[in-house]
Length: 530
Ligand SMILES: [Zn+2]
Ligand SMILES: [Zn+2]
Image 1 (spheres, protein in one colour):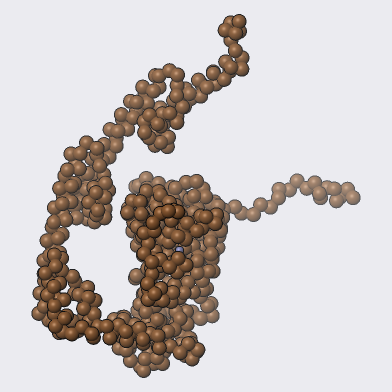
Image 2 (tube, helix red, strand yellow):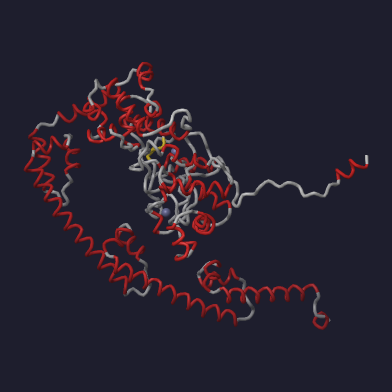
């Protein structure tokens, strides 16, 4: 009995399982077509910790990435700004199949102790999918999906399928995905320092569809709907499938499936497949010698063959053919296009070309071929001299256009350099309706000068704010920080960042004042009450 009591009162410390450094946030939709993207997961993780994505990225993730690029960046740049312009263009790769996804998945898995984060990227398919045209550069979303999830009080998140370049629409709401914020009319990267699921990372507005708001997304036509249904179902299958551990996937698997498909479905003719799938013949030849295909071209080949993407990847073509009776739909689709092209006679095509020649910025030959409904080689063969002339005119006009744009941009930057409001290069780019990266690329020196001018202006503004804070410090009675933010027009975080000592002094002074007032109410001065 005594012994049992001793055991019950054992003072040995309990075994505590290991703890994760960050919250062990559960990713949404693992194993389903609606699985979350890794960039969206990082944004959600940051929100769960009440910090910005930039702060989480710079302070909690970058130090654990085993990469000389980030080690160098950590020593030279401000930690919270690491998710800035240098990396913004690469954030899509975090969800992809390449080196960046391979580096970031283990870092996040270690920090959250979640073993399933590789599902949030396409890295499982790295052996058979090229990074080319795989993921879109900019963030895309369906405003109706956001709004619906908000009204149903579900977690707002960014599905991985919205990042895939071949996916252009939301089938549930039958509308195109949007890439431009309807408030600031700007695009944003899949992950940036101010990313928050459902909100614009530029102007921070809600991207869901407000009631009584006109939806800016265009709806799908029946033809687009049919094609997108096929693409989205197949990409969804890819996102929800775990590669078969028994069958190792390599570029040889694709070569084998492609050869099988050509032999069984296209009478051994790669040219026929190329024409029906609208994929260059050279691309098909490249795949046959082991080049890894792009997802977009692979989907076209599968669509033309009426074989599902997963069946194609695993070379299960003969069984599928027996079950699905392929070709009929794709043949109808191709025939429709071919017939439409042939209805134009040569005279009509010549008229279209002549008209294009007179345009302010003539079309490229690819655009022209699409306009007249002829394959580019045929157009070149039939209208050799006109094609050469239009090509030359396009080059000249493009050069002129570039010079005009440069001239306008130069004028705008020079005007900004003497503007007392000290605008930034981003402000100038926005006024010109131009992409900031393009502005920096064409006029780097002027942009650098303007950037310094902007920084100088900011310094001056904060000096003025400092003087105002010192004036407030001398005023009586002291005022709370919320009044100070109203008077200065800056939020508390910014004031603290630039004038920490003064802010502390102001806050302490107000606190003292409040304490004195309270104690005088509780213990009123006897002289005064009498
Ligand atoms: Zn939707
Ligand atoms: Zn916006």
